[in-house]
Amino acid sequence: MNYINYLLTIVGIGMIIISLFLIASDKIRGERIYYDLYMKEQEIKKAIADAEEIVGELVYTSEVVISDIEEHISSMKQSYNNNEKEIGKLAADIDENRKPNKDVPVPAKTKKEKDILDLFSKGMNVDDIAKNLQIGKGEVSLTLSLNSGVKNNEII
Image (tube, rainbow, N blue to C red; front, side):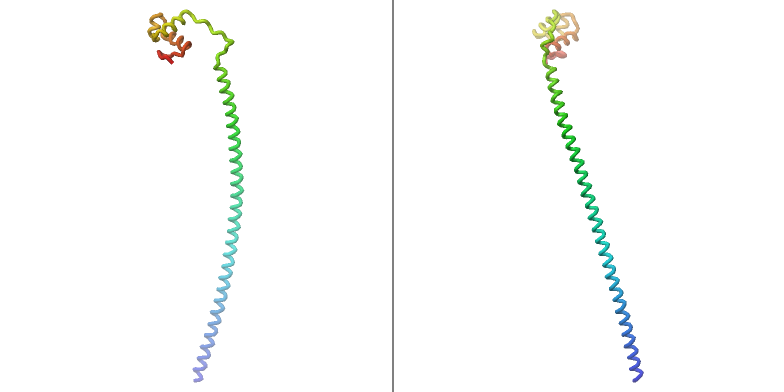
């Protein structure tokens, strides 16, 4: 029985050694897990800091772009307003130029012009007037258009 006691004692001591070895390895693994978690936490904090920096740069860039766009819009509005004023001046000049100039004497109508206008007022068309006065249709049309806005046998 002594041998059995010795054997059981040796087996018990072996189990204690194995248990101590397993406990130590678990402790080492546990510390490694904590170290790995700490490293992951540091990586996440660095990524967050980088993201915040990028967001800050994007905000600054967008503010610059918006400022440039607003300047461009303001410049375009000013240019538009200047063009509107210039168009108004040009329109006024055109209206002024369309008014008959009272200083320029209107030339007296020739006998041929009077005849063309007289026949036209009686209802004759360009072809009939040209045949009647023995002149070209172009001359009749020109005379009528210069005097009363008639073009191509039509009354305007």
